[in-house]
Amino acid sequence: MVAVVVAVVGDGALGEGASWEALNYLAGTDLPLVIVLADNGFSIPPTVGGIRRIGWRFFADLGLDYLPCSEGHNIAQLCTIFEEARRRATDGPVVVHLKIEKGRGLLCAASHPYKMH
Image 1 (cartoon, rainbow, N blue to C red):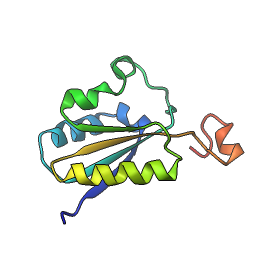
Image 2 (tube, one colour; image 1 turned 120 degrees about the vertical axis):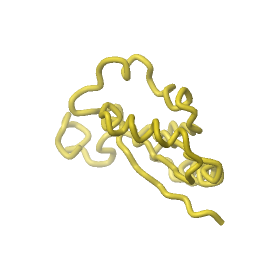
Image 3 (cartoon, rainbow, N blue to C red; image 1 turned 90 degrees about the horizontal axis):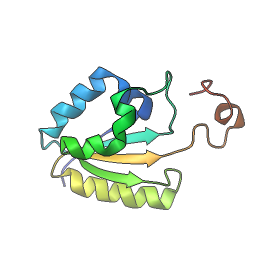
């Protein structure tokens, strides 16, 4: 069984140049890697410019395998999608896009725009 590395990144980090450089590099490899994108739809500061316009389709445009997960707090769905991501990662990097809620289960984090982010 091939060992697979997992990297977790928040959606706000994708506005940074280092994230783009890493994704660009990884798209040209066959490294066994799962990139977990934790997307709570919130960034400090807000996402602007071209990234905001193109949405998440850039993963496919870069040639990265992409697995969306609309219920990022659903344990059964997470288990299924991570098993699939591990299987696919043996052929190269896979992005697992988890839609999550900021501060879910913790009112003081969920209701404040940047505290406990």
